[in-house]
Image (tube, rainbow, N blue to C red; front, side):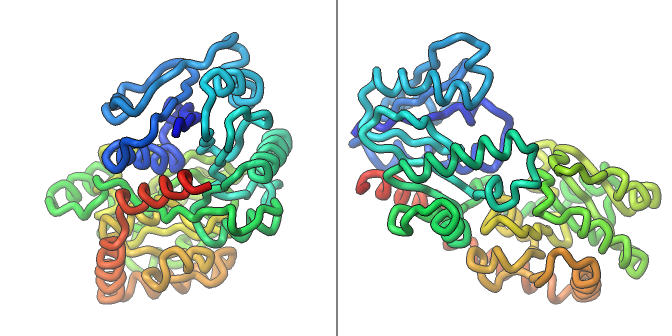
Length: 373
């Protein structure tokens, strides 16, 4: 089978979709030699070892630069010509949308969540409308849809009208590099660099309204003086809309040496940030899973999260039943800070549970789904 893939997300800044997609591509050549894969890039093929194998072929999309640099225009106006020229058996679009005219025999689209539709007010109206309409149409026209959780599968079925039998839930797995830091001097070095206390709560990931970072900050401000070792580190690009002043909310904590805000973390520091955290927190009201949860758990960081993630990580995390409640969030923080035994228990449960997750197993399931559409 000849499988075409829109691989442009590998050229963009790192993110969850790129991490998921790159892990699939690393594994596929090790488990199959029955297919050839045609990758489509916008400007250049990344210098990444796993992309250069006999099964993988590369093509730079042809067309004027003013169209290529606009993701949707490139996808809708230029990519179909490449697909038609290559006479694909299947085209895979891993980033929410796909060409409405897709001349491949079959098409698969990955819609990791549909917050553009369910939480439209969180996005610029033009971008949200564009993504919502094109993602909905792509999912409806596709032979199969890939998503990251059972919750998101139900959302796609409910809001986009896609039959459940066409939806494949891909269990999210962290990169193999995420593992507990055994060299404690590295964690101590990181603490000295950022002046972090022993019990810092880590929030890491792009900041959207649905992740309730403002609630987390306000709740922490209510309780941090009760524990001299408590701290809050927020890492992530502020993509809230309407915009929430994250730096302003963090300022009193930063001034007292109990809070830290970074728009982005150094990739080389991620494992140590997770490993040193008292808890990692992600409390979303729109996502059914996120790769950062698995990264944290794989590093041995216990997790505080919201009920939407329960189907994905079961009882292996401390839950905030109402992630929009400052009072409830504050009570969970008090509980978490006062009990080292609870932290160790959730850390051990997380490490034990993630042992069953693997990219070879997940990649094989995705490939089986593509082969049997």
